[in-house]
Length: 286
Length: 286
Image 1 (cartoon, rainbow over the protein chains, first blue to last red):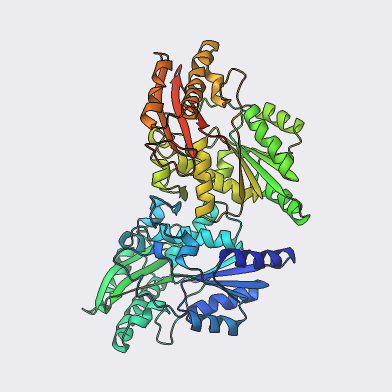
Image 2: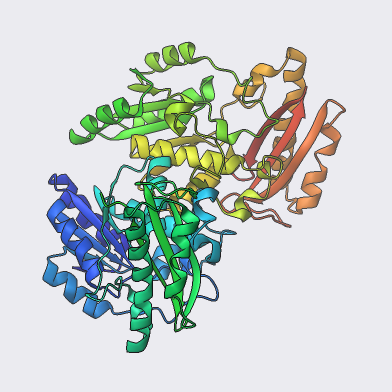
């Protein structure tokens, strides 16, 4: 049930489709944790067959980012997927995905480019080209697997919004299912990058969820002025925290807001021990 | 058999697919001529069902180009398709394709961007953003129709090469079929834009195919130096001809060549009576 080759995977999925079975795709970069497992469980509930892709996508990392040291735990991932009843783990090489010896740049590769207004904000500001790389690999995976449903976590909120926008703009015939953030008991949002943190760092990282929860509480108490809501964060921050952004925007369009409302989402990115962490919260749950 | 709505079309095509029928798509901007009809005939030969899309795509025209005056002959197009046994003509509005009131720019729309090396040459040099618009609408049509085969004319050589590259780079599960250029008896390549020409202009326009044929003849006689081959063109040109480019490049990658070979293609773009015309020829036929 572990495939490395596009053609092998396609043959298998085509068989399922001919039998009229529905297919779910959970795109991951591996290093699976309970956040991923919640997506996989949702996929198993929703679809007859489930494919988990496990691919650290080089074109979504910037030159100074952590592509080389990004955790790779394929064997453990396959075991976890097995236990959960995943039908195929798809773990292609970069050559298989992008062509052998292909230079990975928009000089020589076709890219999918999400709208400037969706990219030039939040994570996109510091991660130039990141969402082009994400959309490109996700569309490739969509075309390779041709699933009926694809599952993404709300943890990467900007990513889900951009992928939903891509699906709409390009008429991709796939249903996107968004699943809630999974947290440790402490409140820390699960992330493959948490592995980089010491125990001390994990404690400092709790500030992200605390800031967001506090903003939500303040909103529920009637504070809607975005600047006032954002200011409530500063009492939580110490010199252990290198805040990249804290924003309150529309949860569908990412449009900046002056006044928060029930459609607002608060998002934070902050470095702890040099590790870039993100988190977010809806000011009003669905 | 004329559909304007994406959902109507999808329902019909899904019925076919469930019956195991193969589907061919011929994407056009309407104003159908015998060039298009040759694509449609090929599609009918190849597939059980044929969809012709008829959509003048706003996002592939530059601000100073002929979007407004581009010929629109939907009624005649439908009649021609009917005679040829086309199953569906798909003629959506711009609102249907891009969302009502949507501003058509990469600020707010997801685009498909072909590689810089494929775009920054030939027609792409003077038509900024043109091939982004082409790839975006073609991928949308691919996702809407989900055909097994799609048919394109070699007349727009750079376009076919870029679309083949997109299909490969994004793993689009569709076979691209390229069909030869159809010409008037005079040698003039058929084009919807020929309608803009006077009889006099049509005669002047013959220079494009003459230049290309002459280059091919010279190549067959053993001249391979690209500069020498290009120089043979100048004796044909008069003050009626506003040459935009004449290039000899690799027919798969569009890479410029110093020495022509059997994989070379000669391409020309030239204005006659202000009308931009293009044509091309393989130095060695398949």
